Image 1 (cartoon, one colour):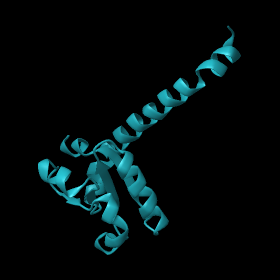
Image 2: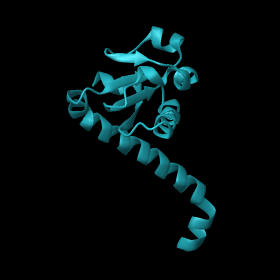
Image 3: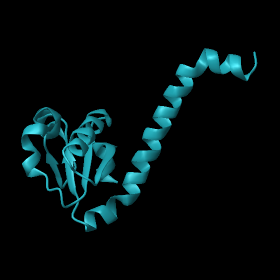
Length: 118
């Protein structure tokens, strides 16, 4: 089996590996940027449910569940960076799309909320 055959047979696995690799790399990049973003007054938003947030959360984070985000945009200033988190990075990724669609310019998805604890 040549490279073309390999790619034809295993492209879904390669795409999945690339996706997880990107998520890992991007989260590390945001963690490295976090001190500078906080100096700029970044708002740290946890988009998990209220129940999840009450069980455990990172100090300094504000809980705005994804299901309420569109109705609570006024609580998030457009003048400062916004760093989003959730349990895995999926909901915060969706929240990033909502904020970008509503005119927020500096929006970052750090992924799992525990990355704020580092």
